[in-house]
Image (cartoon, rainbow, N blue to C red; front, side, top):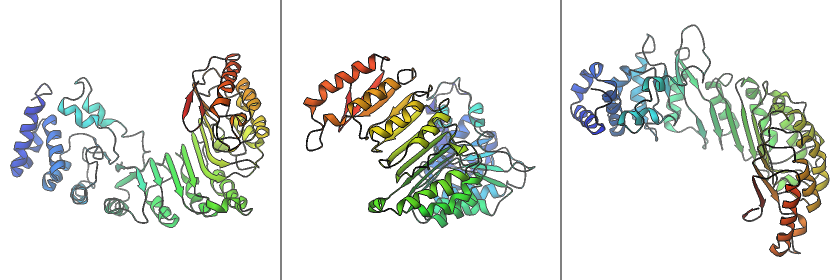
Length: 430
């Protein structure tokens, strides 16, 4: 049988084998790959644990993308397959990578004829087997890929079982976690989990949302220093009413002392949300920020902040930065002038968000003139100028219309805009 066989016929073969469990297990080694994969899909859907255990042992490809098949992990099914893997870990077998991420649906759809037959399943099965996670040790362990989404104080049953299974098989199994999102897990639990994830080699994208004061973030700072493969860092904190207390500035200094300074390699993207920014927190003295492609500062209140360090950072990253977001930062005219010379040097900039700032029409005109040489700029947003607000602080459409037209004339004097918006309650396209 070949891929030319109709998908319906292959499904019927797989369903027939499932009705006879012993026949299915006995004939696994003889099954064509397309039937094997369809049978695996059916067995997973029906949670036929005995058949899945046998099929894991006979899996014909180096990589098993289980996460894209089991959208919702099932503890008994996962436990059954991992137990069967226990019997294989001590000897050589074909499976090299168990991928529990929800990626690569193409692998499964190719067998049903949903994709072009020219796409090689063998080639697809080999993807991300080596480059995603560094080699460790003389003998290559089974690599288990997973993305972590942490929302509770404790891990869910499947993740807890998986981490325990891996923890007691160190040297035989290597957990590779390229993306971690921590929404509410306590710092102590988070640290314990990071120790099991081998953070020094695998974490590429770290996202931390914490409802706490910033002075507690230093507890996991040492682990950031071990993340040699970290490229994207997202930090968001709930500051609440205490933002306006003078003592909050000291708390924010922990970003400088405990987080950014401990990073060993340059970041590709840095996002920082919901906090107050002290004068030196974005200084260019941090090597980790010197080659940024994306810088997002969102709801970072800066109205009393000296932005010269931010300007120095933009100047240093001018050759690489592609996306700059200064959103809802309450930047005022005098502060904006400080960073404009550096902004005008960002030749690779394609996206610039500047809405949510307290900017006059004259300041916006100067800003637009400084973007004249940014030929790659394709998407930009700006706040409605202060002159367009009525005495209630709301945008007056009657006032805004001529201001908008004048700003467009100013911009067209220096370059032809592509997509530009005034950010109000709604997007207003020029």
